[in-house]
Image (cartoon, rainbow, N blue to C red; front, side, top):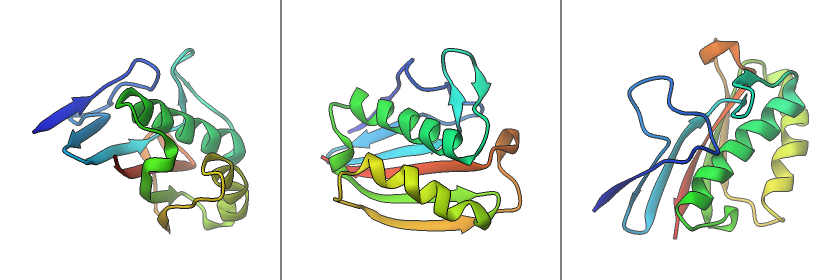
Length: 124
């Protein structure tokens, strides 16, 4: 049965979508922009933006009673592939060496002109 996962610890949807959907053992976390939920402002720089996007995604995962160890696949959208290595430095700290499968792609533009957006697939 499909359950909508929502938390005030991550920014609300800026369009017609849910923060997360859990159906049985599968959970899908919508792409998270680097918006600080306390200030409603975008973080600045790729390091801060990656950290905020992952913190927002983690909050949604935790709302479902799961942890980042349950993440099996991520997709990282970058506005500039030159930010890949700095994104990676932050990204790796969220997974304790148990890294999920991942795709990373450069896109022409992200909502609100973000530098990064990250989505997750979770099992648990």
